[in-house]
Image (cartoon, rainbow over all chains, first blue to last red; front, side):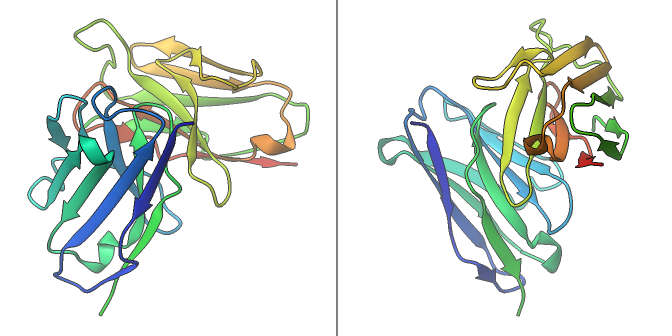
Amino acid sequence: QVQLKESGPGLVQPSQTLSLTCTVAGFSLTSYNVHWVRQPPGKGLEWMGVIWNTGGTRYNSALKSRLSISKDTSKSQVFLKMNSLQTEDTATYYCARDPDYWGQGVMVTVSS
Amino acid sequence: DVVLTQTPVSLLISLGGQASISCRSSQSLVHSNGNTYLHWYLQKPGQSPQLLIYQVSNRFSGIPDRFSGSGSGTDFTLKISRVEPEDLGVYYCLQRTHNPYTFGAGTKLELK
């Protein structure tokens, strides 16, 4: 069945780079787009960006200068890299297949 | 950026009652391809969001017909009839027509 699972460090120091992996199963990344969405504790959802099935990307303009999304289709993995992290980047990060299935999310805390 | 205004912020509904959530957009959500990319999600406590309705009025697989979506252009509504305990949580609308994609702030459904 369709599954997405995020993985990455739970704690990142301020000014460092966040690297997350979304490993998918049950579908091909050449057929579906995958989004990244984040949710600060107790707050709403923020769309971060998408990698299309074709490999193209689109980013939230508020994050564009810091964010990069890529994928390895052969490994069924999508990657998120975001640099210059600050405390306000503390959030649960989700990957989601467009428009339906979501991963369980990974909580990332930015703190020294 | 497109602003999605969800009302009400919270809803207190009795079991078996009906709930209605509005999502109003600051711009028309009709894409240049003619489709309207307005989706509805439910985030149950401690869980990832789950898709209820895609492209305004299409129920996702496994979603009961108690959930219905309607609307066009800038005004959209999610209706939940015969509310059950498993319906509680936060409901979000998402527009995927204009970049950056944006979520509404959420409507919290609680049971009386």
